Structures are given as C-alpha cells and as structure tokens.
Amino acid sequence: MADKPQKKRRGRRSFLNDFKADDSGQYSYMGNVHVYEGSVPYKTERQRVIVLTAMMCASAVAIGCIPAPSMLGYNNFYVVPFFIIELVAVFITAWAAIRLAAGGSELREYVYEKTVKAIPNRAPVAFYSALACVLANIVYLCLNGFAEKPVASAAALLLHGVIAAAAFQLRRGVEHEKWSVVLKTASEAKTEAQAEDDGVFPSVGEEPAEAAGETAPQDLGEQSPAN
Image 1: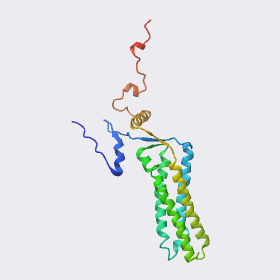
Image 2: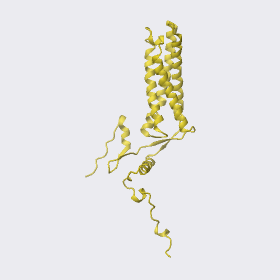
Image 3: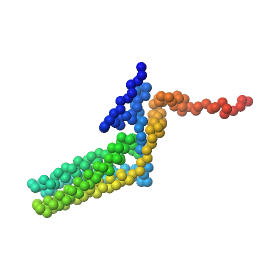
C-alpha cells in the first residue's frame, strides 16, 4: 500500500513542512539553515542584543511604576494610548530578541524569519511610539504642569528616551548582521551527521558500514599485490 503524500501546511504552521519522517517515524528538520558570518564575534553580538533588550524591558516596567503626572493625571487621554502601544511593541520586540539570543549561531528557517527578519520590523514601532510618548509627556507638562513631581516627570521622559535609543540600536545591529544560507541538501547532510554523533541509526539509503565509521574496502585495482 502506497504511503499517502504529506499534507502541506500553510500559515503559521507552514514551517512543519520542513520536518520529514523516515520509515521509523522519527522526524528530522530538512529545511534551510542560516549561519552567522558577521565581522563582530557572535558572542559579542548576542551580548549586545541581550543588554539592549534588557534596557527596553526594564525601562518600560519602570515607567509603569513611576508616579508621573502624565500617567496619573485626569487629562492624559493623549498620553496613555501611546504608552500602551510602546509597551506592546517593546515586549514583542523583546520576545524576538530573546529567541534570537537563545537560537545560537545557526538558525533554522522558521526561527530566522521570526527573529532576524522580524526585529527590524518590530523595533521601529517601539522607537516611534517611545518618541511619541516623549512628545505627549512634554505637551502634558506644558499644559498641566509638574503637579509637584518634577523628578518623576523627568524620570519618565528619560526612560522613554532610553527605550527609543535601545530600539534604534537593536534594529540597526540586527539589520546589519550577515547570515549565509545553507541549502536543504547541505542541511540534510548536517542533520544526518548530528544524528550519527548522537548515536541515532542512519537514514534510509545510508550504508551501515559508513554510518558506523568503518572504512569502505578499497577498489580491487588499488589493493597491494600478493607476496
């Protein structure tokens, strides 16, 4: 009985098309792999991503804890919406940055699309919403005053500025990273090699002697003459 063809998935689950099952039912990733080849050492670049992400998240949380007049005042309808957008943008950007930092120097296609490709699109939202918050806070202070809380007002402005700067640097750094693509055929060979290192049985069509690391016999013409 012939095997049924694998159903192609679309949308958010389309990445599952790159996982293929062998006769034993084990699934292996057979998609493209992106390898980091930037001039900056990978460890240094990832530390930079982690620091910038931590700055954004810590600043966003701190803004919500500071009793700034623009966040507590009665006439702040033009401040809070920008802050909500900023907060959401910061954390969806941070989620992509965390996945990027945890993914290593070799990323599968679906991880690459959700991290390296996504951050340059998400970080600008955090950047522009942070700038909008700075302007909205300034307008609020000009119209309503500091309400005897100048330190809290200044701290809120500073933290919005930190978010904007961190988002700008994060986008700039990730956008200029250099990644090379390993084609599917090379990815298959790499997956099989990793499976061999882990003690997994060879794939279908692979010679058992080669999988066990044994040397194939030489051609008859290359054998040494008999004594």
